[in-house]
Structure formats: structure tokens, C-alpha cells
Length: 200
Figure: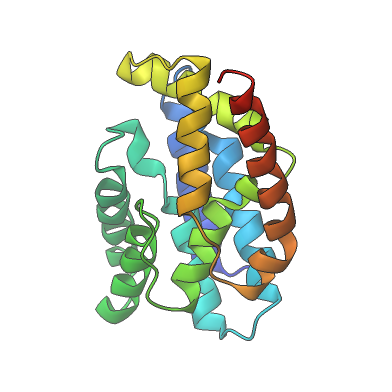
């Protein structure tokens, strides 16, 4: 599916926000993460039979889903949803479509709660790294970001346990994500459990 003018406008707006906001403490929730989520959302969407309007709503939600982190970690989904709403109202997008995009972003709040196809896609894209070999690198970025932002440090065993609990509680929603990321996610979990055993 081709990128349209509204998606391009959303992309330009979000990249602009990253350029004007400090990046030194957003080690995980940064532009690289947003680009990764957008690209993965597109990959999953292209494997499924969704309409052009659903595709547009999904990709816009992907661009905006974490922009609220510039203001607060807590409740960043609500902030992101409000920002996309204001952005889209300027383009006179119908309220029903704006609400779908808002709901798509809100579905990524942990624990994830997707209610339709596009929110399932975004939820899977947002956490697809759990089922990739990049998991440990991404996990350390998040750990360091939490330390910088919240002044909350985790010991090695605490962080391993936290990750084990998170992976056990998480599940993918789309067939694509289950197929592409399920095996490696299981391997990552096994590796974490093996690491934990060394501390016990």
C-alpha cells in the first residue's frame, strides 16, 4: 500500500518532535524504536487483508504511539492519544476514524488490550522485539532508561525476574507475529530462566 499525504504529514510531525525534544534519557523510547514499530506494523499489515483506511489508521497510530514519553512515562499513552487527536482534527478527519486511531494507541498500554485488527497489529509491532535476537539489547536500553528517568535501579537478578514475568504474561495476537516471533521469544525466555538459575 502506498504512503499517502496524511501518513507523510504524521511522519514529518513526529520526526520533528524527536528533533526538538532532548534524547539523552530516552534510550529505548526513541526515534529508532518508533521507526521500528512503524516498519513492523507495515510488515504485519501487508501479510493481512486490511483496508486502505485501516492501513492509514494503523500507520498513523504507530507513528504517534510513544510520543507522550517526552512529557511523562506514566500515562504516556493518554498523552500520545491526545496529541494524535489534536493533530488529526486539524486535518478534519472524521471523529469515528480519529477514535479508532486513539483506541489503537491506548491498546498498547500494558497489559495490552486490543479490540480490533489494527490494534492487534500495533500491539504486536510494539513488542515484537521480545521475539527477536535483539531482545537482550533492547532490554538493557529499557533498563538504563528506567534508571535515568525514574532513579530506579534493578539488580541483575531483579531485572531477569522482571523480564521472565513479562514474557510469561505476554502473548502475540496476530498469526504473523506468532509465526515470526513465537519461537525466538520462547528461546529468549529459556535463556532468561537459565541465567536466573545461576543466581539460585
